[in-house]
Length: 571
Ligand code: PRX
Image (cartoon, rainbow, N blue to C red; front, side, top):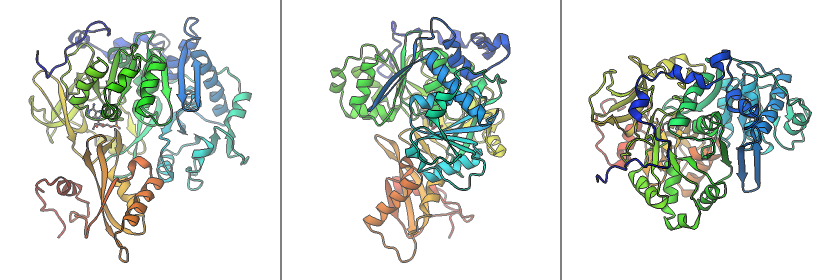
């Protein structure tokens, strides 16, 4: 047997022949799974929630198992549907209309999911923000989206800017809050008073549903806009890739502040009506194994960083738990190391299936289907309905085994429909009819895709996307910092860590205390995951003559690589 390949396993999966699935596939054929095929009316909240709540056999099924170190709660489809009706009524009473942006800045909790569906039910656009964001990050997103309502907790309210947000009319507080100015809405009080009946707002397939901010290599984070139509692909990949079956208990470890936590933490599992486990708080390996064991998780979607942490804690630990329910594991967000795949076979006796996609793509595109052999290190093959290729800088397709830009033929259901307030940015993603990912990759003779790296300066630290520009901008706000250049530096567990090169203003001297202070400044101003783990003081930062920081050169210095063409370097 070729040790480089992990063969298909019978038994645990609903194996579907890859070639057959792709043959004559049309997204239109998937419509029959949804009520709008006959009614012409659509709303994700109906398909993922109310439909099950109306079904006498499903309504009392557990939709959500929420747990954190202090709380455990199980919520049925019916109860989640009723609660989100209440929240929809609250939003409607405060004048929220179709297309308005309503943001959530709160940790995972039953209230989060209730509010999220309430937002969709009034046909507003939901904007979930990662709970670790600090003031600047929150401000940038609320300003750009012109959000009308924000839902947050008393703890996180401290990081919500109180000025320069002219569009923000109300703040819903989930928890005790003493300020009774009419800017604030008391979540629990109003939920008690609101009706649990609501006439859902029916929309068109192409109407907006979700805004996820993500980082590029330049400028502030951009708002990636998704529409209800995406549900076709969430449903389809839930079947083909997540392999969901009626009696599965599913756990996606991602936070809904990131796209995995919505597409695959909310939409795909609930479109399939399965029980969805949500774990809040920070985890240790023991927590992870406990969660898998206690709730008898059968399908688990996680990330390489988490898996690498588990690997570092040893295989023996796994044998202390009864994980006999677990039948399917998937990974996303960063390259899945072949060693982790090998470890998974030993530790769980299961294959770990890599999946590739992006915030912009809205759903999985290149995957290791259960029915395909796994080539460790490869992201797999395009799902049915998706054509993927490798192109050069002019948009020409390249033959197998040649590295280039990973590109997808335009026009799949879950693709972003715009970049909020930035049409030219949106246009810049496309070339010759291809969506250009910015990832470098190659395709082998058999159609498997192999990830090689990012072609731009975007950093991927522990699976989270960080834009160097944002970090640089924050760094130079520190009184001691004159200039800053930020890169991703390879790291065995985190994929990359953030490294900053800075120059100091006159009168400042490099000391460990100063560097720590600068680090804390970014951490408390922007967010913990964006704070540089390493800071190096330089006499100057290399720039082009037009003043652009040459991050590539910084990276070459860091890695001891040849510096290449530096002819544009400022002299
Ligand atoms: O570089 C690729 C990497 O993550 C980027 C997308 O990040 P984000 O929009 O935050 O979405 C993450 C989860 C959908 C990609 O451009 N990436 C994602 N999946 C993989 C990956 N890199 C290697 N292998 C993957 N499976």
